[in-house]
Length: 409
Image 1 (cartoon, rainbow, N blue to C red):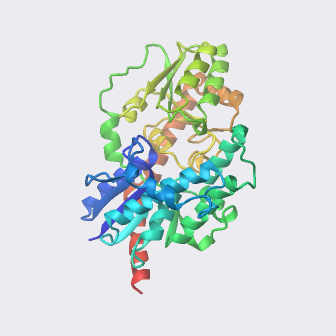
Image 2 (tube, rainbow, N blue to C red):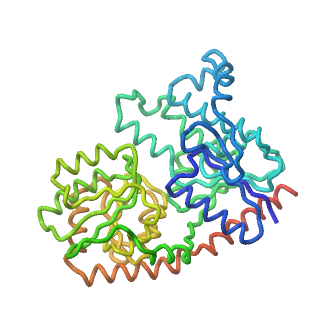
């Protein structure tokens, strides 16, 4: 049996795909007799902790030392821009905390983002394999962020722009193998970040169908309104999730019909802005911001259509859950979504940032019940065959054993 560290630069615990993935992986591995720890940033950003063991190290103890050492004179590269400096200081905090907690106790280190892979790759024992899981493209998300916020002064080719592809490259080269969930993510790593093809393997996520079904059939305090169909969008309220595009589409849809409501399940930095957009579009009686929800499957059980108008995404659990619930999906063409949804068979695919096309496809599903149900039935069949948790665990364990054998030889 192995002792395994699952580590992320992101916040844990946290409502989101990476945390869900880490929890499911821990549960399944421990059922097989392995021991699993979870390392990450705290929800208040104040410490690095191994959340399941109660171990923590305050950043307040680390940052003064780091800032004294990493001056512009001593580290000119990381001081070229505040964005680089902030990410590097955060990464160094994880590096020092991991070294403080001790990594020589683990047989496998399995990171969940490029920053954790880079950090732990620098301080882990040489004999310990490091598996780097990539759940999205940070470089793509950040370049989009820079384009949409010219006031930041980050232009293509500038140091801050180049920083994120460089971290992705170094994360891959620090690991023994890198895992992505789809070909889209692998293509970015290989063709845009210069990572050798052989270092990246592709296999999809899995979904715990028994746990999903238990939540799906649980009672919910939120009930669908009589005489209305429910469009549901579970997502963080941040730019990359494209909720602003969805609201524009719903404003168009309201001009055609009013036999629907939209539930937006999630929270985030853009909530006030999105609520203001809802009022401006006179959608207060159609769009409901539900905040963070602990049981999204119970909401899916009351819904008719799933929609995800994201700007960038990898292989979101929300789509997997919607398919398991038998809902047709209306998703954008970005990221790994076209590898998850087959247009006209399990759902409908619309161009990124295209509110008019999104409204048209939602209207199509609201109008034609038979077609909506047909897509939903196909989606459920696809999910049951494709999103196998057992298959994912088998593949991950094969990666672990292969990496251990490689190290031992």
